[in-house]
Length: 333
Image (cartoon, rainbow, N blue to C red; front, side, top):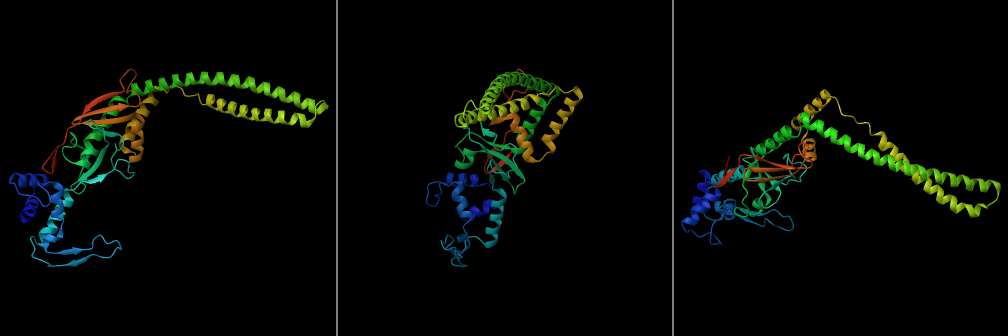
């Protein structure tokens, strides 16, 4: 056991250590082969320092019983503390993509291109390095998915660069304004037709009410006979007035015209700056307005857009991000 602690201090990863022990035919406690989980339990167990801990899971929340030098120590307390520090430094901190405080720009959008699971954000080396890893791989371990580890910063920069190059350009924004204007023109025609029909019916209801009021004033009909009919017509009148007001407001909003070239150019710069300088939550929302999903498989990243980057363009495209190679408990670009 002392050898395991010494190997960690020398810089060996848990996977390398487990492979070495398995090759030598050394049997692991309570199992046939060594793995990261078994090694981690040993390396974090104070029993190997000669310390007895009992009652750590007390249902009454009582403090555990601790007895130093209960038996001969296999490793010193200093060695044990040094190993704990190294394990904390190497350990990944899992950040769920839906967590509000997540500092991962693409959380919720990026998915594994092999199994379809959402990519989970992970920090390593005390928060100095940041990766995106397949949820299946993170949960079930090596061999559960063909995915590797992708550097958070490289993935985010590649996506932002693609959005700037293929979406946030002057020509694309101008075309987008044209498309919006055309769609609004089509809607305006529909609103006008509905407003015309509503106005005709409203005019008919108003005339019928006037005739009933006249009949009431002249005494030709009694109030008891007219009241239910007047109530029904008044309700319909209120409904039609509300519909007419809504349609008139929608038509009044149809005043968006294609901006001049200088204004559109300023929009481009403002939107590009938004991707760099705005708060994280605003940048996330902005990217989600363009990007539907991101699939990562090795160094290949497929962007699926809510709208095509330009008129006539496909709704998805592929870019390349340098992969991460995972081996022996360490990570390299």
